[in-house]
Length: 341
Image 1 (cartoon, helix red, strand yellow):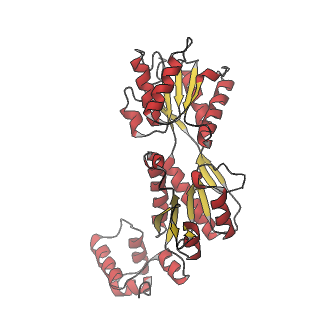
Image 2 (image 1 turned 90 degrees about the vertical axis):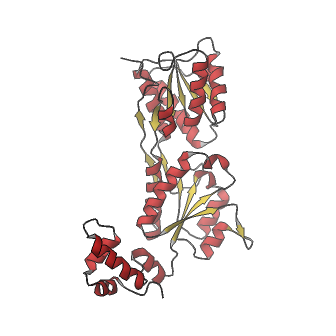
Image 3 (image 1 turned 90 degrees about the horizontal axis):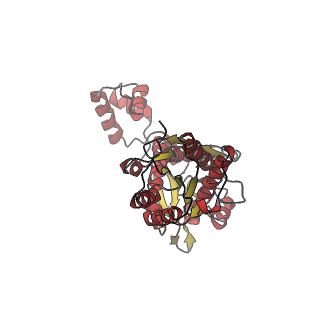
């Protein structure tokens, strides 16, 4: 039967101390390859299950943590953001000797929602939701079962929830501050829909940055639309048609910023000398642009790590008070704004 052997059984069978077995389980590099191989073989022969997995068995707890998704949301799967967050979550879950499973929230099993199926069947220890899935219906169902869950991305919800997000408002302020230091003054802002809270917060940060630098906000300098390269091209084209066009632009999406760059270059203007560009999200696409784009670095891997850590705190202490965490942003200055000498 799986999991009946103890760490002491493994140590005796392998002829080593229990501390040596523990070091091998935790991948301590100080253990020789020969000893490691011998102990791993004994663990396999005895069907030894380490640490939290064994505890889960004895307590009849699941071996998994669940990341909820909406499989119909193609936009999310085309965005590196989702995979970076998932990578951070997976690191923490792996360190806990558990498995991360992906659950499509559109799934219905035997007339039960996927949440009810997971919770009632004790198939998972906790659930992580993106903010887009922190709906009133889903939150109500999770709270009904008093089940541990954490949201990544600040949810637009009246309920006090446990969530982790990057400080998008801070990022908007930092982008303006950086551009002003480089000598730009007519700073525009291009975003996806500001109905999405992260875009709204980045916009509010832009407004804050203008105010604290003594610059006037102009409605015609704030464009709102989609997140594609084509959207960026179209919105920047409109801004360039103004008699008093902007001399810098902040984009809330790295893919959209490629369209912005194309529009500027198509108009025969130079980046950064005529117009500077700052983009949110320090993805590889920013470095591949010509010139490389200055970015507001949003550490989404750390977002995943902190989200998972918060969930495990809730699992260990269900009565702990609600937490909201913001992760700081920082400017990664590159050629697209380095006009000042």
